[in-house]
Amino acid sequence: MTDRVILGGNWYIQEINQAHRIAECGLPDLRMNTEQFVMSGGYFTFDSPTEVSALGFEIALQGAHEAVRGRFGREPGDWTTFTYYERTKDLDTNKNFSRVVSITGLVNGIANPRIVGRRPGVTRYAGGSVWKYIDIQDGKVIHRFDFRRNILVADGVEISATGNDILRIN
Image (tube, rainbow, N blue to C red; front, side, top):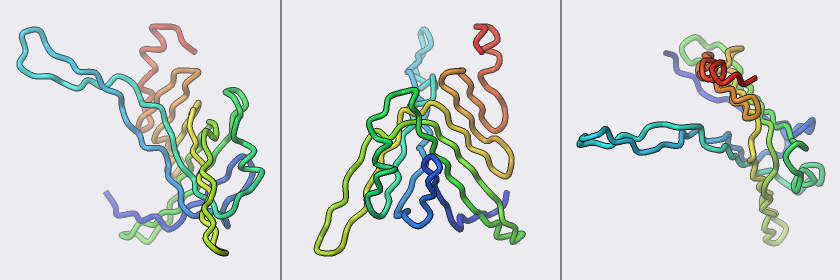
């Protein structure tokens, strides 16, 4: 295991480069839904993981850009592609590494900036209704979620393959 630090990140919303506008950004938090399970006659409960929770994320940009703002109000099928690029550096080897996260979803909320004097705040865009998600680190697929095709990949292994084969999905 090596020590890597994040040296920078950038977002594209559709084909629009946000490099000069980013104030804050956050990738989706990954969580599993759980269901309590108790064995017959058992003394303990177990939170059994069931499925991946719906993904959501936020991007805060300087200014209020109509090309990004115009992505709000669209319906499923009229997706927006969000692409995050990250540069990390290994402190032990002094090597640079890359991460790319591609998200297909919707802009589900906009919090407009508050203006105080001549100082504008940031515009916050809430992304959600994630249809596809793929996280690639140095060319390796770490996670891939595809709602329509029912694909779940974790650490490069397609977890959903056997279940999908039994159900004849895909």
